[in-house]
Image (tube, rainbow, N blue to C red; front, side, top):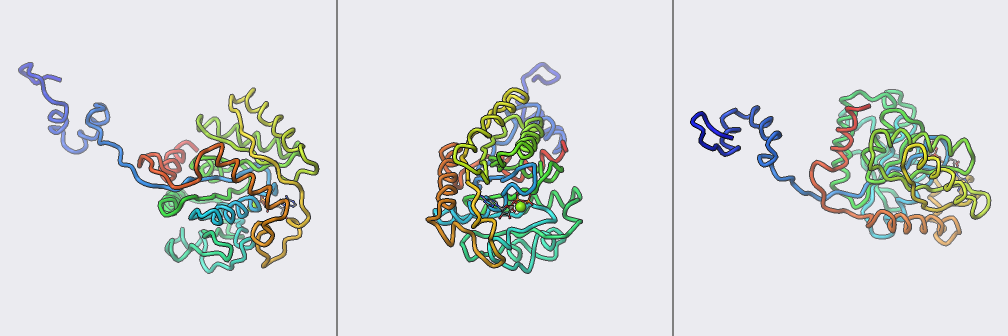
Length: 312
Ligand SMILES: Nc1ncnc2c1ncn2[C@@H]1O[C@H](COP(=O)(O)OP(=O)(O)OP(=O)(O)O)[C@@H](O)[C@H]1O
Ligand SMILES: [Mg+2]
């Protein structure tokens, strides 16, 4: 860069002459003028999703939340099944406030987060609230801010995502560090799981999927189902999935009564509880420590949520 007399001018001097707005634009054009990214600590975020309803997302996310807490990680589960939340029932709590009060400004985050008897904290969702199922852009931004606040205060944040591929559901998946896809071995569940992979892959090339096959009738059936799913995903959208393991169909899970705490808490040595512990260990082997780490400010869960919102 030169001045009118042909003398070299430092980029910052030239940008400075343009005022704050011009400096911003100029600064972006000149890489050297960009401020150094600020690092901060944030929780590792895991979205538990499926496409098809009823595959066991809430069962898996509440169980993982309990296991992570037991492993000494400060863990919060966010019930992102907007409008049809149920995690509070599975964790044995009766919240006073939920996302409904939080997003309407009637309760603060601290007034909404609730400790559960099994250890992890819960940000409860609301049930039967149509407004939450169709959040406005302002509410989505508010939700993104609260997610950022929760992540800044935890080691792990679990997001129990609702079924389907509506924009808030996809956004929550896009914002997370990893997506745990809970499917069943039946074709209908696999087709919907593939639909989720396809939608996310179109929006985020570096998305990471780990697949858990739930309600398997006989050992080994989970891996067979996974192989079909990853093969189709690799062929059609160029994404390879990672296998987390299988959880057998267990009548003790299906017979869960109101007020009863999760099986991993009440019967830690049951085969299903041990299978879930293996899933947690395997997840850590695949994606690295499920723990708080230092990240660039622009790379956090809130920024990803905000950024992807513009494309949905
Ligand atoms: N491994 C299992 N064995 C037996 N029953 C199970 C198992 N996993 C989940 N279930 C049962 O399947 C039903 C659906 O589970 P859950 O509510 O966790 O699914 P979901 O994916 O969260 O559903 P939704 O899409 O409605 O949110 C529940 O009754 C649950 O107890
Ligand atoms: Mg659920």
